[in-house]
Image (cartoon, rainbow, N blue to C red; front, side, top):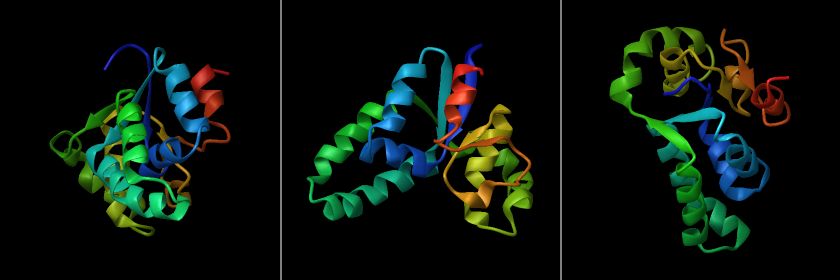
Length: 142
């Protein structure tokens, strides 16, 4: 962790980075001024979806896995041992939606950082939540 801004990524964001260009471009462009974090479970979730997406796109899974590895160099992986202390607080915030998503909120609480996601289940959870369409506002400091 440094003095720069911090932003926690959801699995769907890192997967968008693998499948498209916009997310990876933002991560690369702002990696010197923003510390990007992802919970270990979200990264594992994205990795698990890659073979399905590769088949859908008719590309070799290895190509997408390589792109994931390149994106991993731009993010800090947060391990369960670090964020699990916030499990109860996180599950209370998302219990009416998808309680299995608690690690993302717990990581945000641990870091006191906003969240970048496309999952509407997180909207209204009491934490700043950004989507890809408007995360540039936060990243640029507008």
